Structure formats: structure tokens, C-alpha cells
Image (cartoon, rainbow, N blue to C red; front, top):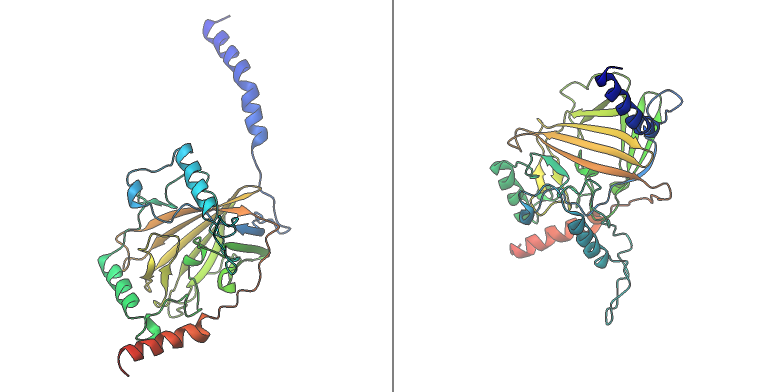
Length: 318
């Protein structure tokens, strides 16, 4: 027997069991009755991993196992539902808080992975507008957060983890995918029937979303924003607290069910009026069939908004 053929046969004999096992482990996503990849269910995305990479971790893309364990231990110690420490009366009204207890499985130091530094590439003009609005939010409602005004968490803001209400229910029907957000009790109905975007004259708070399937991935393309929205999240270290979203914004979301328990959610945000270049984040969504979404009745505007404006007029001596 040829020596090379003999070696090849030995390698095949050694590797064949592992190759067969790998094929057996390949996961095939289930299908809906009309043949769509099935993304349905209750999903949560709370995590200790911040949207942007903290300054103290500059240049470090991944946590070590030890660093991740230490961060998760600190997170568990600071949870509002922990047992009160000696002399601590505990909390009584923060049962809704749910910031998460784990970092993402990849152990990335930020949800943003492009640019490689894990930082959102803000334009100075966008930061200046954010700072102006925050400094003048007692002057007029138009400077106030969309959160305070109970309008929307936005696209993609509503998909970025916050301190609570990080649950999403996905329901599919022929030609449509619906994502119900626990936050602000908002529902996105996304057509996946091949229709084009609405005319550019149609401008919406959350833009016009149309979907399509690329293999097992749901791709949601959103344009036609009205220019009044913000990207604001508590999952960032202070910088993303009201970045204006212009009419030129373009958001592409990709949802891929990678196993029975996980959807890989990836979002690319492009807005040349707010960012120096597009940026991309990856946010795992974890199956939680026992989670129950209650109505989110946003009442901040009933008292907080007029009280803030009244305080501003008192400050002005009016």
C-alpha cells in the first residue's frame, strides 16, 4: 500500500468519530407552519455587559474567566432582591429592577464590537445637542427624554438592555413577525412579505421596518425616521443618554436562532448626522418561557413632566 494512502486511512479512522459527532450536534431551527424559521417565544436580554467598553478596559476585547466571575459576583451582591445586610432595612419598591447577573457568553467587554474599540463613534455635534437638551429639559417638553414623555424607547434603543423590563415576546403569522417589548408595552409589526419601504414622505418615530429572511436569519431594515427620536440607554456609561436620531438614520437588525435557548441579535446603526461611521452591537436574547410580561403603564408624564416644567418656571422667577 502507498505510504501516503496508509497515513490518510489512519487519519480518517481517527477523525471520523469526531466528525460524525459534530454533524450529530448540528442544530436545525424549528419551523412555523408556513415554513419560517421559528423565533417565537419569550426572550430576555438583561446582562451585566455594558453597551460600550468602559474606559478602564480600553484595548481589552474580552474578559478572562476570573474577571467575568468577579464582575458577576459584584453584580449579585448589588442586586436589589438580595437579602438585606446587617443594619440594612432593605428595599420595598424595586421589585421591578432586573439588570441581570451574568456577562454575555462571549465575555466581550462591550455589546458594541465594531468599531473594534467597543465605543460608539459619536460626532461632536451630536454630543453637543445631547448636552444642550439635558441642560434645558426644564425649559420645554421638547428637550425632555422620550422615556420621560412615555413616547418610545426607539429603534434600536428598545432592544438595548436597560435596568428593568428586558423581555420580548415574538409572535409570527404568515407574512409578519411581531415583537412585543415589555418596555413601554410597545409592539413592532414587521412585514416579511417582500413589500418595499413606505414612501420617503412617510416619517415615523420608530421608522418604517420591513423584514426579509436570509436563510435562518430575520433581517429587519428600518428607514424613514422622523428625526425627533433619540438613542438613549442606561446600558451605556453616560455618553448615550439622548443622542439625537436624524431622518437619515438607517438601522439593520439581524435575528438568528442559534440554538433552542438563544437568539443572536445583531444591530448595525448608521446615521451620518450623529456618528462618524456606522457601529454594530451583538446582544444575545435568552429563552425564558416562564417569564410573564405585565402591562407597562408609563405614567411619568402625568406628574413628572409638568412638575419639572413648573420647577423650571419657579427657577426663572415666573
